[in-house]
Structure formats: structure tokens, C-alpha cells
Length: 218
Image (cartoon, rainbow, N blue to C red; front, top):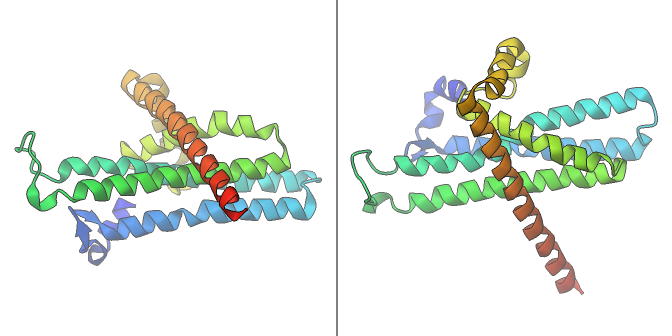
């Protein structure tokens, strides 16, 4: 995605501390894809209950495309790293007066990414509960570690989701590094642990929020 925007310099003129505003808009637009895919999967299941083999295959295909978009939501959380670029690198233990508000911008941006990630996970979980309750723990076990790898591939190796189809072999070799090099493996492992923690906390908070809404409606 960085390569795409670098080809259209006009899109990068509006920035917040050198972070293009168009990237904020683009990242939130990408959140619509997994939401729509989840709705489509649920509607498809309601229509035919996935009784035939080819219907199951198509549902799995939709699920895999959904999985490609999930790391984009969680990736927004990592953009809080731009906080460290607010002040010049030669300034230690001092906050630049003209740029202090950037801390809240990137914190809020990352927070919205966290909530979006939890919402998308909950949405697919609720759909799978209707399709087959046994699929829910399988999703939670596998999706978050795969999401963690997706984040690493974008954050460290600068891959985009669609490049899976353009150069799958090189991407696969890159993925293998996370299981053959200690530094890469530790990054993946710790990211996975924290994504689980963030998911559980977010799920609990959203669950309580839903209960409060029900009480207020009564």
C-alpha cells in the first residue's frame, strides 16, 4: 500500500506528523470488506444451510477472503508507533509543545483499530455459532495467530494482503522465517499473546456494553 500511495504524491500532501490522512481513511474503508463478507456468509447460510458440498466450499472460500482482511484491522493498533516520531530523535525525555496533541491522535487511532478488530472477530464468531457451534473455538485458536503473522508481514516485511496472489512462493518463504529465526518467532509469539489479551478484554467490554443497552431499552 505504501508503494501505491507513493505513486500518487498528491494523496500524501495532507498529513498529521508526516502520517498521510488518506491512509487513515483507507484503513477504515478496508474495515468494510470483512463486515460485508461476514454478512454475505450469513445470508448465504440462511439461504441454503450449506447442505451441499459446493456450498460448503464456497463458504470456506468466503471465510478465507475474510481472513485476509482481518490483519488490516489489527494493524491499525501498531500505528501508535508513530508517536515516537512526533519529536526529533535528538530530544530525550521531552515533549514537543507544538505536537503534544499527536499523542492523543495516535492513541485514539490505535484504540479504534483495537475495537474494530474485536468487533470483526465477534461478528464472525456469532455467524459461526449459527452455522456450527464447534467452529467457534477453532476460529479463536487459529485466526489470532494467523492475524499476528499478517501484522508482522505488513509491519516488518511490508507485504500487502493481495500480494499473496502475486508472489505466493516468496511470501511463503517470508512466513517460514517466523518459525526458523528466533527474533521473528518471538515477535510473532508475543504479538499473538497480546492479541488474545486484547480480544478477551475487548469482548468482555463490548459484552457488558450490550447488556447495558438492553437494560436501558427496558
